[in-house]
Image 1 (cartoon, rainbow, N blue to C red):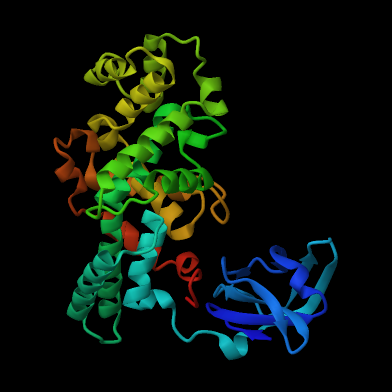
Image 2 (image 1 turned 135 degrees about the horizontal axis):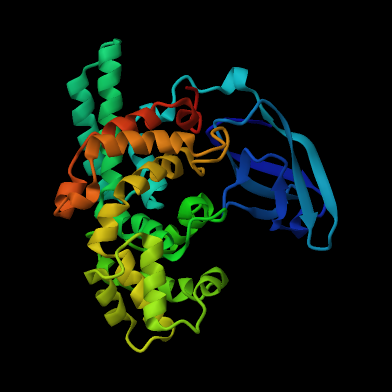
Length: 375
């Protein structure tokens, strides 16, 4: 059966005893094609058993034939060899989905807030982007193209500086920076992509800023996450339970690069209280949420999020294979914004800057655009 790159197709397979196949027994022989969760059903039709499911295919799926693997509840395995066919010559999209306003805005929610867009937010940001693009005009010139790229970059940057991201993704980043020393693991004390996404989704679960009891939900998520975080094996190996309050707080401050005699230390010791799991969690949170660490790490986190959000990889993964690209962009951002710890208010820190030029460089790169279609 032909399937469409970037599309979702409904697949039927007929045969003997297929009613004995469960969803867990269905797999596809391609990393570019996946079974849509909840779409699997089985039954009988015309005297034959069948399974039905929806297959989602990425835009980057290479042409060729792919097989369907079916395993029954009794362990029997069968293959439908070459049952799915991708033919780019016939199905390749003529435009990249990122070039459509609706898709671009929705993708910012996926990449930075790790959730589907809420209707109010979607309509607001679609309207904002459409207004920016209208000002650019429709001329097929390099000047107009640059204007459109800047428009998308401005909208995308807004997701990084949003309250929701600062309270979820950026908080996770600061927790790792305070908790772990720079070493081969984690290199430079930075969170790795997979753990960052996992932990950000945990803290942000069920949270949509300005909707419902989002503040209470966020607070409950933070407390539960931090209680778990300080009990992870990696954390307790770094901070043995035999540590005194002073030793524990000093170690966290040293990792975070904060002074050992500043207001942050006293605040963390006060949060530590009687100690235990809850005291350790409160002290770590106090340091991670301090204004000084927020300002100090802002540029480093912003650069790292370009890789996590747009490219969905670590900054030293292939094709970079080093931190050279990360260092290049961090150097440019630091040169343009100066020492962010000198800014007196968070409003100054979050104000629009030349960060959008860096975002623009990432949103037009082939590595990002190939996630959704042709360059």
